[in-house]
Image (tube, rainbow, N blue to C red):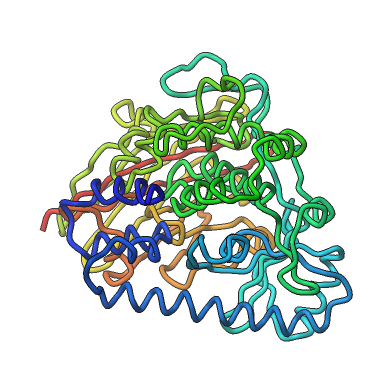
Length: 469
């Protein structure tokens, strides 16, 4: 089956690794059911994951049927299991963390869910009204589906794999509840899903949005989504003219061009009626400074399963540390400046350094000098390469609530002593184990967004630490 072309390519990249590593990649990209199809042996871990996927699907459907009884107006389910339902099972069930819902009155639906015992885990942002949880049910309540586009001058000349634009990512495209109702099918009386053509636009927009906004973590997007794009294109109800019309209507042309470049390379499928307009497909380096980073090879980048290579592509160096040593890195020293990315409104770069001690526990302390106060919009984050592996310091509790509940591992503390802000990150040996790279190395990306008076500083520092025992 042609959908397995992608899977086989991923396996080729992982063929020198063991089964544990391969299962990690399969799980990360939510490809378990397709992996099962091409395997000629039973793997206990895989069977357990597939059973968990089935159980979660049944739990979700049971919840929606009960919820439906209390609804005045239909609700819409997007992404997740909706494509499985849409294709009558030809798209296999996938793992899903939450149920994405849109409602004619999302505030009313939120109130209903809170009254049913749900707890709000994340507050309102641009397109999301709330994230709510009750037991094993997680709800992502959307006001609309956002569609991102590049700015008009994204085809500017490259300078060392970077592009500066006059504005940042544009979110003028919106797919609303009313739009989806117009292009939907019924699962039941009051539970709807988008039809094939609109589901394709939503999926392409989601993949593109994830890709441009995840420069320092893997995966850039989950490859199951690309498999589902290919399979939706095989559906009888797919209409290329209608699909391209909807893409234009919702300003999703850049999303479609991005996906098309991957489909042409991997599946030899072309969605476009005319040549693409984009020269590159860069990722956001700094949101607030309209700075972008271009991968050397797009297809290699989306198949990348090696966080170390991502860090190196961003300029990371490897620093060795012994058990008895404290590793100190001053990021503004001449020898280190190339491994960091900076942007500042006042073109004033504060001194920044880290101290690392790695015994049984990893202790990393970040120092930012010449600081006057902690601003409510400050964000300082350490990322270990996984979508769930960020330890983040926020300048205010409200900012933390906006970005979601803190992770249940690691420890963060801070101290403002004089004009020096120190942020301490601590991870135990057990917490570190799953993030270690080959040869006892650890990949880290440090992100800083520091606000002071009329100045703002953004930095990304990619680092590789090798422990000598």
